[in-house]
Length: 450
Image 1: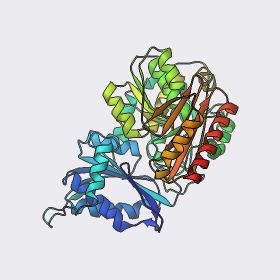
Image 2: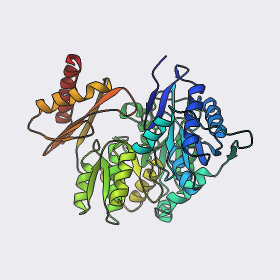
Image 3: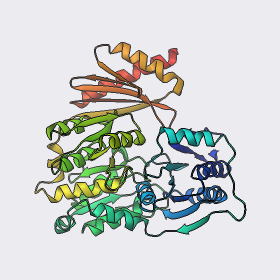
């Protein structure tokens, strides 16, 4: 049996080989016990295994007395938004995010509509080792369907932008939802904003037409359609639609890192406030905050860590370099739909095309790689890297980040997979790739010798 990945962030595994309905029911019952039979918002992405797992989840939640609000197929950010909108005790999204099609998982939400922080995560892990508190037949929970999740989410996003200005431009947009949950709200949002929309993979059945992660090598089809259709922009979402990648009007993949940068540039051009990103995010955003004279903060990697820092400094906007925008006015959750709205709002205020806007941003190249590494070997790998680059400024606590005046490299363990990530950024691709490769070699040698 393959290993289930259980952490403070939730649960992931391969369905039929590690992730089974019995354990899913146990997980849901532990969550229902934590929520003390309160209201729980539940939704799932479009994966074909989601319906089976949903029945297991409902069994655990109902047995612990919870009132379940079932959104059906909906995005991860929609689940978070509805938790706060309904004043629920929490939420649960069935998703494995960007993992391959055979995977699925459970992502719990706190009462504030954000993913579990470390304290709540540890509480859940502890509860999983204890008996669930099951209710008698008189105290069982109920299920209520909610078909308005996308509409509630949409209304909150529309308040952020100049809807009339965007509608006047009648943007031609290609949206690649890749048969994921983005198919529910994505086309609705773009059509409401007056866009001429071409949707790729618009049936949310989980039958991905390309690998799930919205990386450059997976979005060549989107780039071709953007060019062939004469579109102003192409958007790509991951299966649960909390991440957004962008292709400009020339078909150039501008990636997930610049999704956050574009949104930050747009927001800070209109109002000033603090910006928070994680330690693996491009320094483009830091440069933009400096350009506008705004405070800039980095948190540890992980959505919950970014949110915690945002709340601490009352941030105007934040997010992660994986295309995850966090807009407090909508919810403390990564939200690809907010990203699309802000990019279109920014384009509506400009006469130049998206490529020109992108080229006006500070220019860096970020390179990411990974290798299999047991979690217990991450520390010696970091020690070896620090020794090899003794001239760099070291930041510890979330793996290791090493900074020079014009470049940086980071190694850290993934929160969701048994791998170690190696990330480097520099002003040009050759320097960034060389630094990333050198870091990876050092890490591989340290792992072999440990």
